[in-house]
Length: 241
Image (cartoon, rainbow, N blue to C red; front, side, top):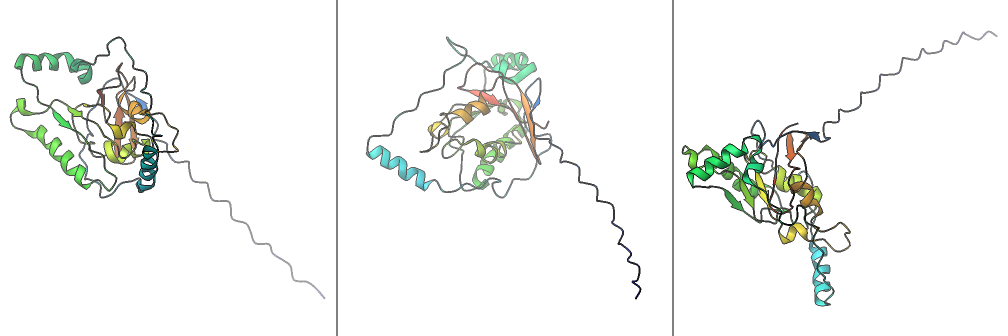
């Protein structure tokens, strides 16, 4: 009995592996502040990072407070002692001296002052305010246009967590075309029970860095100011890398 020849099936060459994704999220150093994105974009409909309920954390805080076990946290050590100072000229960058002199000669300073902007539910209400603030720069009278945004605190709810800065801060003010200065509110410095991060750590990283850098995230971009000696009332910049 003869066996019919067995023809092995020819193996097809392995498919080429996909190239690794391009990493465009690493910080890129920049030599000056850049304000606002180059092109305005539509407001988002929802947060990119879902924010779960903080009810359990607040229940623990209430219990600790009732037992007199809620203790204050230490402040970070200040920089630039004995008297940290940030001038408008520093805030504006290379053109700062000229802009500061123009403000002084006019005797008029217009700026936005807003606080408690953080939200855990979604971007809609915050975007309505941020869009109106950005529209103020279209005023026909140049002297009526704001020079900067002074944030009065509570940038991020509820505990100043780093992972919520994009949704609650960078995204809403992506089109704001001027410097943003900030002082920390209680929610920026609060630390949830069981969390070991130092108070104000994320706030300092985002508002009090020592050099300029730009970070691109998908369709939105951000740049941070890293050049001031103090952590209270520093500016944040946003731009595309």
